[in-house]
Length: 265
View 1 (cartoon, rainbow, N blue to C red):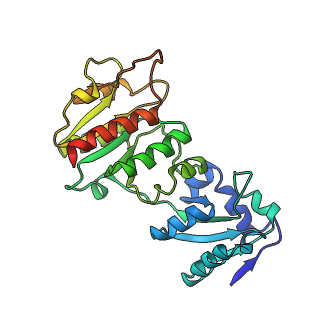
View 2 (cartoon, rainbow, N blue to C red):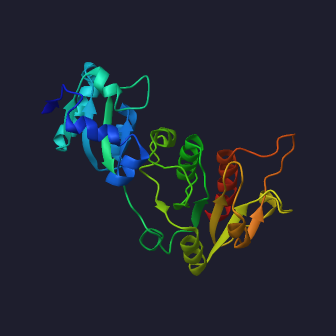
């Protein structure tokens, strides 16, 4: 059964709109996903959808009706509202007319990195939503076991990050923790910390990566903080053949992840 909501002052509307802001997401431990494709991916990954909103136009397509039937069969509540009110609950101009609210998956190091994990990615203050989403998607593709987010990273439940992950937000084991806790845990579990660093003589493709590896990618403008550099076991850089000062963080991460993965398969 689809519940009709006509008033913009409805509590469910107000609550959903509050999740567009980081403050609201952090308070409620919930976030929004928008679009037909990402909802189907969420269902495939058994993500726990709390409820769904659709606009007046969504039911016009047959495949959309099939998705709604699947949601109803899973006892997920569906609300329908006007196109205008729906547009106020999303941050895109050309909406597909469907959104869902999900609960955060809160993870810690001890319970989410196990003895079989060999490849971890550490992100130090990555702040661009597009970069963050692309890195998560690439890590998923490259077979990274876990992503550790340090303080100062962009909110991974930002709608722009979610869209950029192309569904990998549901697949990846993402852990938010402090730098000290991450370093202590990884060292205790025999990970070598490998940092991307411009001021080293060691090139990434002339280095071997044995055992367990934790790759660090730093802030777009300032790189990796000095303390984390000092605690790294290896520092590597990607050669620059042209005049650019450096590579985009997501591109650097992709190159390094795939190089390291060759040694771990």
